[in-house]
Length: 218
Image 1 (cartoon, rainbow, N blue to C red):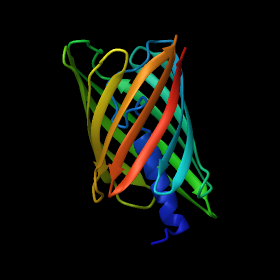
Image 2: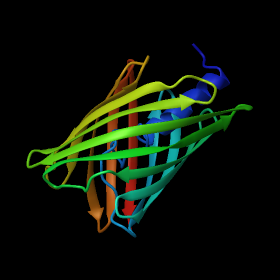
Image 3: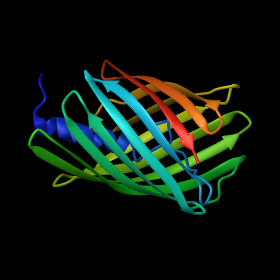
Image 4: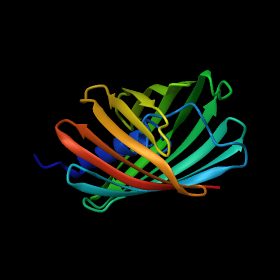
């Protein structure tokens, strides 16, 4: 069934906020972790994604303005359907990051998509718990996404990752109320100083999802 412009825009708004992580998560995860850059440090992520016959190009800078407080933005362009998405997010750590143990964070922001003569806006909030140990890390998200003029829908996600030098693979499950969950695997690894290469493969409602990206830390 062909999507109407409005339904495509709603999908991109949801994709922007969930690829912003259910809020924005650090690549290549879609489930966010309760961690930020150190104060005065940041990164820029760039990646291409392919899903449901559409190719989307994404750029996302992030910067820690204080200890445990990070701002980020994302710009996305669906070159297949000619839809542009933007989003901004503030992420706050309620507890300090721990290499062994659990910590808690909260993020929120807004997203906008436009194209085909229509536009959509959405606001989102996301609660985050991360637990780290010698076995690796587990991340859990529970939040809500509210498109303008509509009721809010619950979002959720769970991710497991474990370093296996020289890469860190992960598996994750995430979704929103009323939609089928996405199952995704991926891996990341440094290819040069402060430069990461990453990729993912997932399945959602019988369709494949791909992404490939890089991350530059500064």
